[in-house]
Image: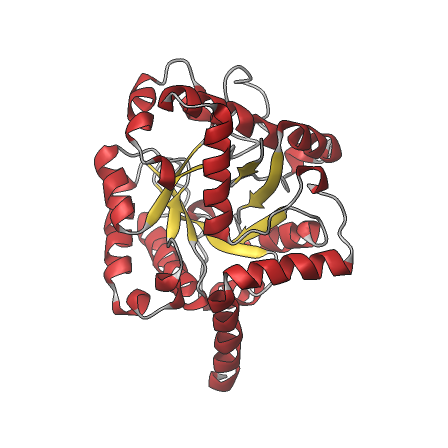
Length: 312
């Protein structure tokens, strides 16, 4: 059984003391690839440096809404440059967070909208964070996918435009997301014994639009709640969803892994290789596979870089 943890903060300090052991347990659980989402510009730099040369580790770059207070043109330019790293497979996590109230909503919205525009220009799918902000997130995404900029962008030609990470909406929002050509992702909360509403909702979600995640070190699944989350626990998410859909866990794993690879343009890797150092030849082979699936994205990045230099 092969799995992809589509949202895991493996670069954070919570894993500093035992990261190799965490990766080993992920391998043992069948995890073949991990996507590390962006939080802020410095963290994106560190995540890219750590992912460099490691098989199966990929990165999304972006500024989280709780880090977006000073987002400006210079930050956008840094993201544009970071996005051209071959390890980058998405732009995120971006969105709105009204729970923590760390950045005023107007500033969050400006950063969100600018990063959506950047993602469209670069042809990168977006990873969306929404906490206590589903109504505003839905309004912004609905307008974005209808905009002339998006329609004319390379992102509109990709299989999917984005994913609602740690989906917290209802069935109506899920249906709206499908209309935006978005996927949904579920993690630890679906395993919570008291999550009755989510247990009822999950089987109504389209399986062919559903990816798996941990959001480690956060949102630890049952029976490990209260402890640090880690990527091996994506298997628990898979097992719970399989039970809710009344299908074998192997089928849930196969479907969600194929979808994640298609969404991010990931190369097919052996589980045993996760986190291992790659030779230059192996990295080149993986990149060739990725380019074959997403040649429009790579061509767009090159064209955009040339155009940006001309403009400057």
